[in-house]
Each structure stands twice: as C-alpha cells, then as structure tokens.
Length: 287
Image (cartoon, rainbow, N blue to C red; front, side):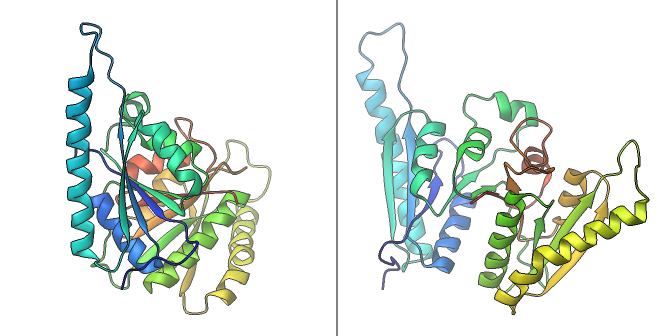
C-alpha cells in the first residue's frame, strides 16, 4: 500500500544531475517512510545563455532530456528502496536555488546534498544551493554531506539550543525526530566565555543549566520514551556542537533566532556547522 496521507505536505529533495544524489535521497526516502509522507524529487533546468548561437533550443532540449533521465532513475531507486512511499519527480525550468526555494513553501522539509566546499567557495559558488535555500526556506532544511552514524549504539541526535525562538522550534523538531527513530537526544548549550566577565563563571554556567532544564521540561512530558541528557559545554559553539555530533544521526539547530545560531552570514554557527559537522545538519526556522 502506498503511503500518502490526505492533505499531507511532502518532503522535497533536490536532485543534481551532475553529481551523486544517492546520499541525500536515501536520507529523504527513509524520512518519508518514517513519517508516512510523500516524497517529491525536484530537478531544476537553468536557462541557457549562449551568446554565440541565436537558437539554444537543441542545447536546452538535451539538458532537459538528461534531467528527465536522472529524475526517472532517482524515482525508480526510491521505489526499490521503499515501495510503500509515494514518489514523484518534477523537472522545472529556472535556476536551482529559487526553484527549490519555491518548492519548499509547501513542503514539510527540504533535503539537499552537500559538496563539502570550503565555506567561502560554498558561499560564492554559482551552483551552490546550501546557503541560499537554507537562508530562505520556511521549513526545516536537511543538508546531507555525510552518512548517518547508524552503527553508534545507542543512536542519538544532538540539539543545540541558545534560548532563542528558533532554538525552541529546533528542540521540538529534535524531540519528534528522536521519538520517530527510537534514538536518544543530547540537548547541548554552548557557553562562550566573553572577553569581559561581568558575572562569576559558575553563575553563568548555572544559568545555562537552568535554560536546558526549562527548555526540555514540557517536551520530555510529551515524548516520555525519548531518553534526554543535558550538556553545558564551554568553547566555540561550532567546534563544540560539531564535536558533540561526531557520531550522531544528525545535529539540529534553529536559524534566524536572536541568539548565537542566527542567520546565514559567513561566521554564523549554522553556516559553520554546515561545513564542520560530520553528520546530517538540520536547521529549523521559527514557527
């Protein structure tokens, strides 16, 4: 029987015809199966700008045919992996980032692959999707650059929080994901020593521990089967979160919050994790 609940929003995954899409697609297909959601594969065909030829129709036709072949191959791959998941493929005209951004408006989440470029190269690459889609999407974005650490026992997910509204949304997503997977949840708050200390360090750390307890209290009641641990780490947020998630199924953080995990500017924690974490990175916007 095909999984496709009435009125459900789909999981969108971007397909790159020129690169290996299996890792991101495997994550998306497995998630669709877990959440009983349809899966939508999107491949964008950018406009051709050939200044030496008036008629670019043959080149564009060939590009669309290649894209169509890749989509069909990817859809069949999903059907072999999860026959019960409803999967569709859309070949759309336009540049990939805005096309996928548009597809994300009605999506439950969007899944992208990562080429593990340097931070600067990723930001300025014309073919990069990670930064613009993550910055603009109104749904959770999953960036899959490395495999999940499914051999780690017990399996766990890391959630980084900082007291912002987006961190609250990320924590709720992380609890739900851990519950779906039967995984433990490590909720991490990273305290970075300021240049000028106005309070005693122990007072500051105690405040972080209180933040963790208050943030997780209601969600622990909602998800009683999820084993939760609280950790206050000291250091740079990117380094500490990446280290905490070294063997995780995923690391989940908020974006556009008021705290340390805000925005997509170079140097932000979200952007740093996209390049440092060795597991899928899930960023969640404020509801």
